[in-house]
Structure formats: C-alpha cells, structure tokens
Image (cartoon, rainbow over all chains, first blue to last red; front, side, top):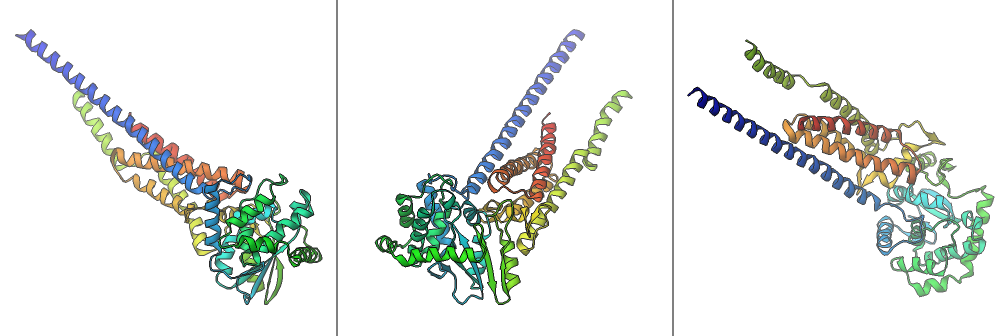
Length: 273
Length: 158
C-alpha cells in the first residue's frame, strides 16, 4: 500500500517536473520569438527611416544620376522655386529691400554644398518667397578654371543664363548644382547641359539653344567675373548681403566654405535691414 | 519553520521589486531624462528659430547649425530631434508598463533610436563633414539606453 502511494507520488512529481520543463521551454521559445520580433521590427523601422532620409542624399559626387533621382531632384527644385518671380539671374521680387549677391561657379562643389546642405533653400523659402529678399547670381570662375578651363565655364554659365531668358535660370542652376559630377572629371558636355535643359520644367529647348549663341549673355558672364574681381571675390560661393543699412559679406565656415547655414544668412539680413 | 521562510522570502522580495525601482530602471530613467533635455533643446531651438549653442564654431557659424540646417536634420519634414524626443519619452513611459510588453517596447524603441543615431553620425562624419555635439550626445545616450533596456529585456527572459 505504502509502495503504491510512493509510486503515485513519484509519478505525480515526474509529471509536474515535465509540465514545468515544458512550460519553461514554451516561455523561453515565446521570449526568443519576442526578441527576434523586436530586433526585426527595429531593423525594419531603421531601414525605412534611412531610406526616407537618403532620399535627400545628393547625387553630386557622381554624374551618374539615375532617372528616379533626377525626377526627385526636379520635384525638389520645382517645389522650392514655384511661384517665386525670376528675371534673368535674379530670384525674387525686384522691390525686395534686401539683396543677396551670390558669386558662383556651376562646377564648384562648395556651391553645390550651399544648395544641398547649406541655408540657401531655407533662405529662398523664408526670405525670398516672402518678398523680404532677392538673390542675384553672378558668375565667378573657380573650380571650372582649376579644371576644364575658362571655355567650359563660359559655355556652362551661358547655358544657365540662356534658361534665364525664359525666367528659368534658377531652375537650371539648381538642377546643375544638385546633379553635379565629380570635380575635374569633365562631366560637363553638350549632353549634360542639354539634359538639364530637358529637365527644366517649361523650358522651350529650341529657344534655349538659340539664346545660347546670344553674345550679350557671354558678355554678362564676363562682366560678372570682372565685377567679382573688383569686389575682392576670391572664392565661391561668395555671398554679399545688401540692404537699407548697408552691405555685409556673409561669413562662411573656414573648413567647409559651401556650408553657409541659414542662421548666418538670417544674421546678415538683420544686419542690413 | 524553514519551509515557511522559504516560501515567504521570495514573496517579500517580489514585493520589494514592485515597490522599489532597481538600479537598472533608475539608470534608464536618468539617461532618458538626459535624452529629453538634449533632444528637447534641439526641438526648442528649431521651432523658436534660435541660434544653437555649440562648441565648434567658425566665423559666426557653428558646426551644430551646419548639421541642423542640413537635409538630414529632418525626416520627411519632421525634425529628427523631435523624433528623438518622442523616443526618449516612449522609453520612459515603457517602464510604467508591466511585463514583457513594456520591456520589449523600451528595448525596441532604444534599438530604433540607436540604429538611426548611428546612421546620422555617419552622415555627419562623411557627408556633412561637421559634428554637432548635441547630436553626438544624443547618440551616446541612445547607445547607453540600448544596453540598459537590452539587459532589462534579456534578464526578464531568463
């Protein structure tokens, strides 16, 4: 009798131990699944966030900008400039009290940085769009003259000025800066310039081609350079803010000259307003 | 007597752990609050349009402002600092949730914050070529939090 009871107790203890072990295993499995779920879920969210953030990644270090990237760049530029008056190389209301003169070279990577990473976009959205300021672009040869040379500089700057004859200089220039190839790689050729023209919304290509031969535009590029030299411009981008209280040169970061941020532009506007 | 004490001791220990936060929990709270201050300051500066305090400054510009005005400072129009602030608050709130779900949420959010912080640090170093001390601070806090919340999550799994 005692032996039967003992056997029963042993069997019960065994069953309980097995049940406990099974429960422990199930719990461990569930937690492993949860850990895997947390890791995978977090990785998926981070991947999506990086994909969204990388849409802002400039394609400037490569001239191989694919069609999807180009479409995205065109949308960015259109959103930025849509509805803002343009006249030649001037962006914004002609009667805006503050004028920012921007000396640039379309092949200059620092100017590209100013467009992509610096405060230009915010300045256009906040100051130019609201009529507080306008931007006048002037050509000044730096990177192009250190690489392909003056001839290429004249050709590319005139191509942008020719778009300006149809009030689309800024669209063309912004596309140029956002699709810039590697410095000194010789990426600026007829195909590249024409490709930008084709991406510029509403540009009459035939008229643009004709205007490229207009000697007045070449003369304008050359006189911009002369004016820059006279004003003491040494590099690009050089930004001069002028308003009712005078003119100031917008300081640039010594280590990253292109990345003039929005606060520096705002500060300059306040100084001259 | 010994049987009685063996059954009552874990109960009292469990009661203590419910009423008194562990060192790990306190650590998570402290780092979350540091993160809230860091990200909160960046959010405040962004919306109040103030000049950001920064150690690395050149010619009236700062490396922090350079990073903050870059396209990487926003995710589809939302300031990443605001996302970070929300992340710290969620990790903090996850401590109030009992059981595995709270631990999993805390660890998961810290993992997301850590992963995205690493990406942003990469962008600072190799794309923007400027370092924002506030962002590095936040990335460091998130790294500590991923370790702490990870330990908390894995301890529960044992």
